[in-house]
Image 1: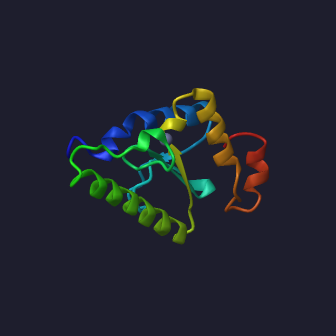
Image 2: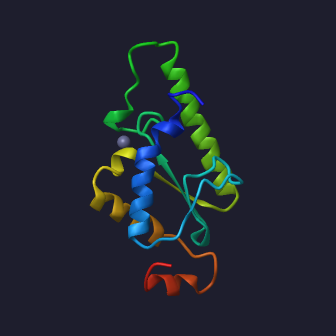
Length: 142
Ligand SMILES: [Zn+2]
């Protein structure tokens, strides 16, 4: 793994998301290797996976952090395009396997209140995979 690897750059925002999920009392697992793309955070009962993506490395659409460096033109566009293509292949594979996929972008992790709300929205939407689970979880976190 080289030092420009996306996964290392993503560590800080990912830690913030984990912390926020803990604060909300959500139960999750990390980096389930058997799932495509080894998602950063997995909510097994909700059949939900969350990726925490660096805006630059994963080219957050419309984000000011997602600019492509002017230097090394032979390198950056190809490298970043590869990341984006891989991300989209991973999302497709997960959806085919029946998972809901959400991306939390680095820029969404900067303000705790914003991140907390985002996590609430993500984990409250969608349908439970176990009948009756939703009614129980609606009263409080799992
Ligand atoms: Zn962004």
